[in-house]
Length: 127
Image 1 (cartoon, rainbow, N blue to C red):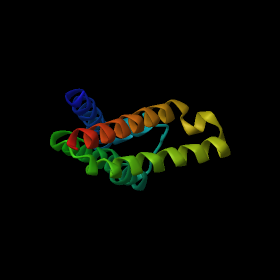
Image 2: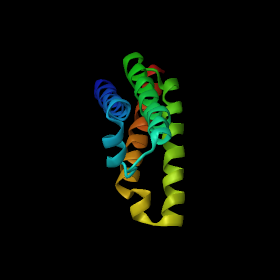
Image 3: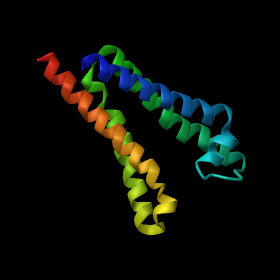
Image 4: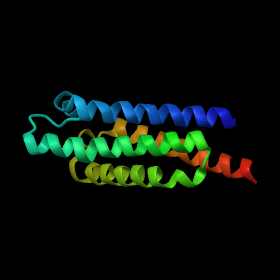
């Protein structure tokens, strides 16, 4: 189970890294796939800085945590995902399911569940 948890977390970390790299280097198309169309220069900069930073930061933390099997590194990614999910919930209430990206909410919940499982497993195995 330990190896599986590390592999799954590493795979999610690599997925985050790919999404972040796409946002950095293929900004207009990657942002359009997220519903952000016709960005001005400042908008492209914001996508690269804020959204790509979210994914690349989360990727690096997850990859280091999986490599080190360190449950204490998982809370920052959990916090980032909880905040993103809270924003989606607010959007769901204010603007409806299409704007909230309900499939994205499902992905965030699954990744949160994976992080919680890894954290509990790693703490239990360490003791």
